[in-house]
Image 1: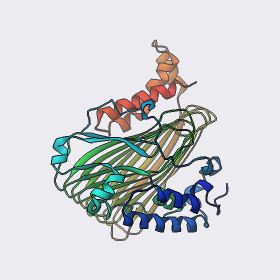
Image 2: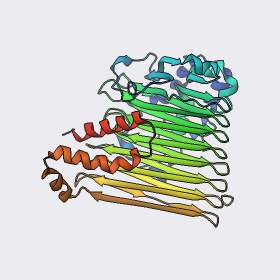
Image 3: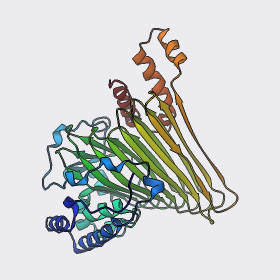
Length: 436
């Protein structure tokens, strides 16, 4: 496929950018950053994408000129959500077509100093918090998609937890597309100060079966000794395109647990970085993917160890059926200063069809001694004897397959402490197996 220079889509060209700015009611510093990002975007569209990351992503399927940023949100009532009613939340934010429909936070959390809500509003009311962190983890300079997002981001969810505060109730964020041809460029920004802890459960959903385009970014910034559990459950309809840069930066003695669910979308690509900046920082990354039909889901993950005594543990589990295609390209990078690093990555794929395809490519780049880094990948099929065994004991073929797939994912479920997430993933697997 071609990864070389292409012109900017007309709905995102210079005229569209100026028209977009005219609709925004934002501080001058936000507008200036957008203009810098748009200049970067113009340059990035003139250069080739990194073939190591993008050569297996069929971007010919994506026609950005067919999508545009909407001036009004579609009806959010039709979202088929998974997590929204599965747990009690301390606060929630709901977005539709890049615009916030609702935002609330429990009074006791607000009085404790937690800031949670719509990013568009917080750039005005909490500039001192947002300005120094926004795009500090996801750089607009990375590639054309990160610059594109930085120029046109439409809002999103922001969470700030002050030093030492432990938020017991999880928070919820819903990113939705409700209108045909709508483009959503929402941004998620989570900042935990030293010693703070919190959990944010985020999901994406479609209100209709019409095509949509999500070009997002996620920034997770953990101070010293902080603890964050972040879940993103991607469940767009099968006509939506999903591209995102997502980065977690972890300071000394902090811990990040990051769970990714890949269920929906026609074409999805996630660039996921975990950066361990401080001594004894740790990260656990969990991935659950179930692809059917002609879905194409791609992950480019990097575990960056920048300090001594750091530990990362990445485990992805993928199930494929029909003619689906899933790509995982992983890399553990250990810098010269990161002695006594412990890094692990693994991706297991279970094939339910002769026509599905899984590409799992682990890698290591180690610049120092005294480390322990391991990686692996497996691909296999459901054993016919397992199906026969289950059926001989009274189970239907569907029940047998469901049991086997649930067992395959169980190692991931055991790593997720939030029961609501485990329940939702289990229900989603059952629904996927029921697709003919």
